[in-house]
Image 1: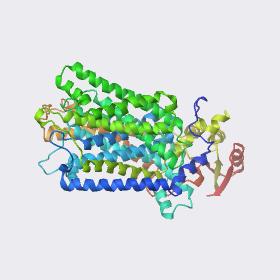
Image 2: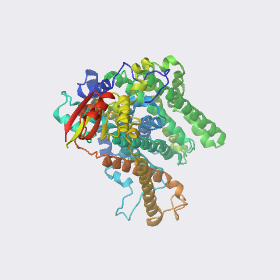
Image 3: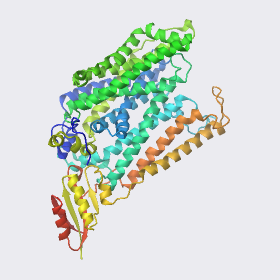
Length: 459
Length: 173
């Protein structure tokens, strides 16, 4: 049996038994949705439909429907792409890196964080696809034999690395998620709940792949999870490093820096954990998981946000220092313009939301408050969107020829597509919250005796 | 004599584990244990060999790396070498740094997917397969030990009851 120091706070509250965990995890699936779920779902669906219309308009008209111009030829699309990819990173960090570190608190939140990863990467993938202008030719990014004089993709290009990195990341995340889901689907199948329709029962039996929980199968399950975690860990770091190389391998002042890969990875974890908090603080209320997603979980995540936020702040200052220290006047101007130019307000939002407000987590009372955490997590979400906007647009809008200096302003199509992906993301997540076992209950049962409140108090 | 199948049902993994040890010490073969979650030490107590899933992952990773390298070599060096940004394109190893990301992704993609597929095949898990656990409670909160007995079952039943089984069901084969 696993042991745990007695002074550690329990991770499962409310004197649960194994059966209670089963019942609590199955409840959202077997029960009916409440009013709040329907309100949130309708809003998300509306936003999603609006996004689909804007995407259809873009594809029908062309990329001219966006606010891009000759100088600022990358703006909201790539900002949103990097933002969504970054959000995806926390899921894999929680499920893979924290598994390798044997962090027990990951077990109550890893399923939802992985779901968030997958849904986030789906949103991210939309943007390059739409930006191609002719999305039906998207398969041209794959190295497939063709009849254009055997025209191949360029393996020297970071944009192609991105294709490989993101498709691997998405598919490996889905596999990792599903391997863990099989025993939990089997649990739903075996409950044979009377509130589930025969159709749904058949569906869960189908999804459970005939899982039976034999000792040998569990042994393989654990090893496969561990190896997948080991594979996913460098994968997380590679994906955002490669995304940062989309910028860092160019020669644009403000992008051409070696600090980008670690800086982007940290930013991704920072924004990802903020989004996990935003989602889980709502979810624990909506589907009654207060006993499993506790303030202790939130506090652990806040500590990670504090750490990564401070490191991101260090990266911002390092960038400024290196620009000055390099002695390259173009580099120096790029950063001076970033902080004090016409986009100073975006820089100020970025600095406030990413560097200053997360420092409030040094205070225990703020770190252990759901309300404060929820508000600060929204701040981080906003701040990290602006970070990407600042990096992308301020580096482009004053380019090599002062005659072509210009500003970027989004059209309603730009805004519509962005809001549409937020709607799509929440639509998927809300549907997930009602149909999937949202907590990895099989894994959670393994820590009940070491971290459950009843067993802690007995000792 | 007829063989019978005994199902001993437990509600605690520690009691189950000590029971498994006791029964094995009495030289009685346990056919299978069904549990709602992985139990540490159960595989050793049952005498199950170590799994080779990690080894398969390593092999698949090597396959992915090799196929990725072969693909890039054929595309970038043999079929259509191009001078892109002055990067050397006549030999694979000169251009290797630029190929590292894709080689890494190919390795991970092959290792993760093929290992997962191997896992599903080895465990006989596939979409739509029907359940094989003898009691539906074993995915909830009960642990089930399955023992096949030739002849006298009373001794096995006695040990099961003594070591803490809540229910003992017998079934003719």
